[in-house]
Image 1 (spheres, one colour):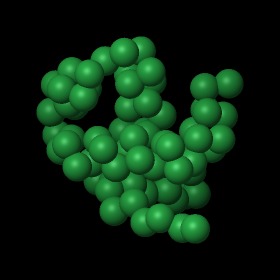
Image 2 (cartoon, rainbow, N blue to C red):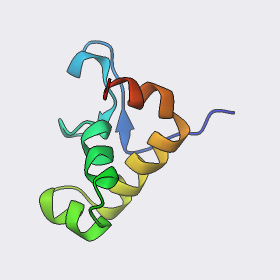
Image 3 (cartoon, rainbow, N blue to C red):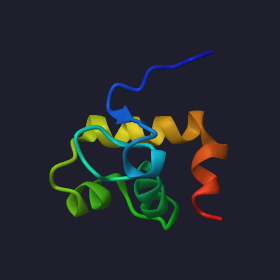
Length: 75
């Protein structure tokens, strides 16, 4: 089942084809790295003042829908 992620874009011609928060250069993998390190949602948002809570939660949702894809970026 395909789930649309309104705040995530993935373009093979941009950012090496990696998933990023739409309108930014912030890779989903960067958000996940902070999340995995134990940072709270508030702490992550403080580090990215131009990212909205909706964008952040969509990045997390995208990760859980596409774990294999994002986990490859950590290898």
